Image (tube, rainbow, N blue to C red; front, side, top):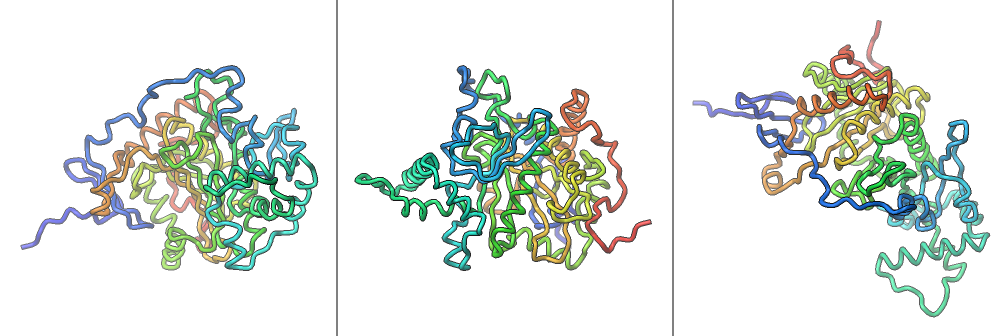
Length: 448
């Protein structure tokens, strides 16, 4: 006699009672969606909604426009000209901190995941010539010195280090203390707004989806510039992890739009697993991701350069966005390819809405890997809490199955497109092509 087994034999299996069992083909993660557990609002309404006073919109946290001096010296900023064009300013001095309005700023993280001392002690890494020049220029003015002293004191206070009481931090001491800021391998890309322009309430937060299409393109382009710079400034960096934690339940320190870039000295477990899988099947990202999603009617949105679908086998409801470019490093793509990816990503965030906590996780081919993999981004809705059942069984309960997720997002995208809030050339839901092998990263594919 054979025992009955309900173990799924495919990435997606729907049982007669409606339970959906999922297996992630890249990670092996097992996920269940049980009927009835997903009929709850994604986020509760705020208990109170604080009314904003005049001028408060630009000084709500350390990342806000009026509080540039509360963060370490910035590496670069993006400003918008009167004709609507964008340009990047590198190495803004303390004296010029408020001379322009930064739409996006790249600043060092006050507490790096891998510190400057980590790279120096373990690899003998040194500051680049550009970083040394920036440091010297910043400390050549009294305002730069005072700004750096204030940031050093902030870091010491936050880390529990006793503050000097009998004397000012000397210039030599200061130079040593601030080196990590100028040679940081962990940077933050910060948006201008904390709340949307004209907001009357503190709950009217400015998320990725509340940016305009053009603003979001600039945000992504600036992030990619930062990735490239971290790779170029430290030869020991094997991978630059890029992620965005939106709202505190998703791990954000501030409810202010920002991404983080972290140079690390290995590929990371998920990237190495993907590389190993590609060694066995170079077309895995078509076969196991986009092709399968199309077969299961999970496609959400697409344009000539990117495609999004409801992911499967994730601990949280997840929309996956893939670049269709043959280039696998974001900084090698032409602007149309990069902007096309940005537009699909923006649309997913707009459909998600600013009240849903979510993580945005980037994946790309590391510089030292010769196996191509497509640039892809996961947007994970942090709407459930991993608990004892998951810890004990390693089976995760995801309250929204992929088809329900797809319908929620597609319905919202239709409304947003009608209102002109997302890219007008976006194909949505059933409009998306289902052509096999939409991803062009695989050089071994033969095409007519």
